[in-house]
Amino acid sequence: MLSRVAERVYWLARYLERVENTARLINVHTGLLMDLPRDVEIDWFTLVTIFDAEMFYHANFDQINENNVMQFLLAEPNNPISLLNSLSAVRENARTSLDILPEETWEQVNELYLLVKNEMAAISNRRRRQQLLVTIMERCQTVWGILVNHMSRNHAYHFMQTAKHLERADMTSRILEMTSLLMAENRSESLRAAEGILWTHLLRALSAQQMYTQTHSSSMNAEGVLTFLIRDEAFPRSLFFSLKAIGRYVWPLPQSTTTLEHHQKLMSDMFTEKLNELPAEMIHTRMDDLQAKLAELSSQISQQWFHPDRSVA
Image (cartoon, rainbow, N blue to C red; front, side, top):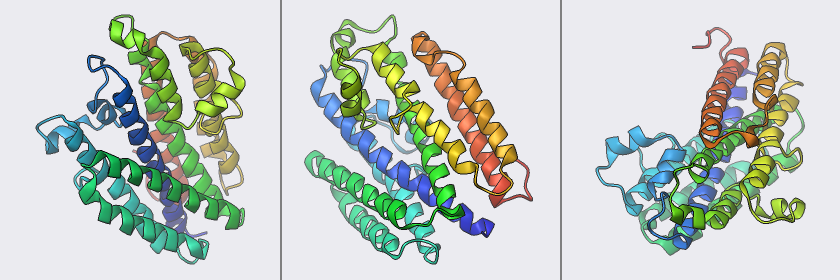
């Protein structure tokens, strides 16, 4: 398989997962803010913080408000991780990979891109924006359904699944960083009073609420939610599941030994201690560390298969 083709399908999958995750997170966060009292330490800018995009935001907007944050995260051309930019990358990678993707893929991706681009003018309308976000999630799941059900289990498929789970682990780690706020010793009384709502919405941000309640009969609490999202072996958006899946899909690829060694070290570093039992500030530190290690793993994948003539920075 040509390295440039492998790179295209890898990034198609990463960006497709990112688009769906971004839509879900914004959709859930909007509902959360509607349920919370106004004086809690969570606002629209919390979304920007989750994406670690404060610098890009302040370079483009002077004020922090709902409309500016939505413009920045959904449509801002100068924001490299805006949903529209990510979806544009999905479209371009699909367009240049037509010969190896199921033929329905391009049609679905192109229709979604045109729909989203046309609707971006209305994102200041909260109701229309929420409807659009739900549509985006559903369409992304449709594309994944086509890929999973119609693709041979070849190298292209393995690169796509590796990319999907790497991107998914990164997003889960970013959402888990919010727990440092929810568990901080100096959190406000308003935040303490709303903890049940907050843990519920955190699960919803990862489509995890129903699966959590099936296995945890007790009420929402920090230990239960963190254990589920970090260590659960059956839920496909838990850190353990996503990180383990990366190794499963890298293993069949040619000359994968070095990348598997990187992956095994990451797994060992992450799960030798019980992250769910760490204090809030340490969870934040561990999630930052995981994001750095995922970036290193992505660089290793790029060096191994996409740009073998380059060294990892």
